[in-house]
Image (tube, rainbow, N blue to C red; front, side, top):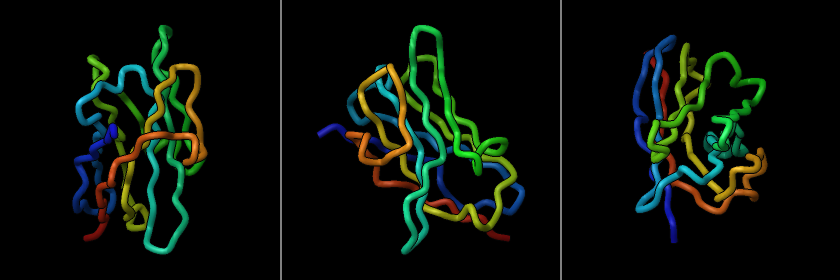
Length: 127
């Protein structure tokens, strides 16, 4: 079972920035579409954005609520996908998870489309 591993979560002050990372455990993400989600206790999972990798480069897509503050990138080797978060607010405090599916043709919003998931990393925005 291929597994994703998130890292980089923690405590950050309001207005601060944080970068989360998503890596494949034993495999590279170079051929995968990757999405980021977040979820608060007893709330529905919220799609943040996704990215696919093709010969033309990265093709990120973002939720309206994330555009402008959140950015998805990938390292040059294609092994790790990052979620850069700026101007964080207390309401951004959630468990953040990444998901992946092996394809370069598209990425999707629906969680059921992805085959592999990480366990998530907690982000807490508080003074």
